Amino acid sequence: MNWEKIVFEAGNFKDIFVLDVHGHVGAHRPFQLGKHDGSDVAYTARRAGVDAVVVSSLPAIASDYVWGNEQVAEACRKDPDVIYGYAVPNPYYED
Image (cartoon, rainbow, N blue to C red):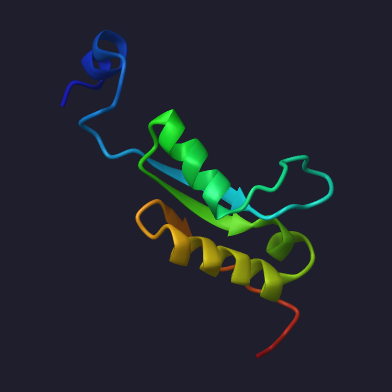
């Protein structure tokens, strides 16, 4: 496959599956992202020509891993063809 031709001559990726491997759902105070739930992420991805996004939760990373992982699971359930989820473990709990 000639990537240079696809990118610079064709100008789009219509025949290529585009996977964004770094996305987030949920609000976290230092980041002003608005509502930013799975529906927002899926909408933005489709608008940008991205086929799917792998997401984790900002609250899971920052403060509440249980609630944050539930946000990711819900986003995956609502839009399973577009949203793929990372689970965030909490290293401070043995279980």
